[in-house]
Length: 133
Image (cartoon, rainbow, N blue to C red; front, side, top):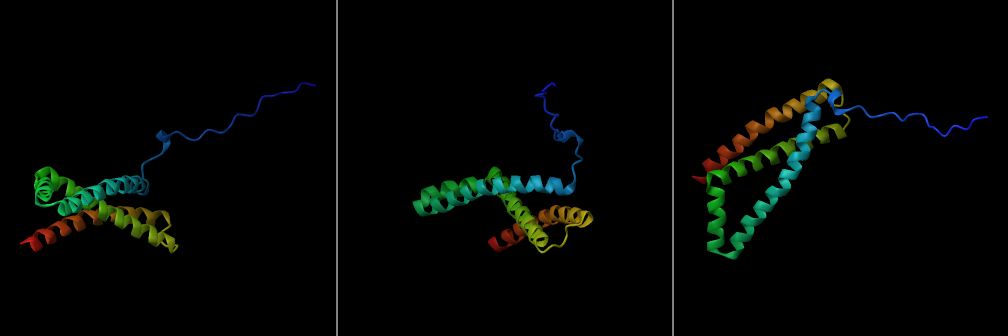
């Protein structure tokens, strides 16, 4: 009688190269990235508020940064990140009700999320510039 100590081979997970990137998968990845970006954006907002509390000189430095072209690009990206992440949250709320779980509906919601976040961001900036005077 032979006692075999070998175990049957364990199944391996498929490698990432066999997956086709779908809109739902891409939006899941982007949702995680925008969540991290929102964390760092909140630090910028906190810096702006803190500089306002520290006095005119500190506030002028913060406003100078946010008024520069690089500051404007960062703020625009942060605005888009907030809007895109918000639409992702709305999509998850829809899923929580049990709707939109079908493959076609899920794909359409992912595409709609990306298609809506860009114009909404631009609209927010237009309204902001018009309100500024």
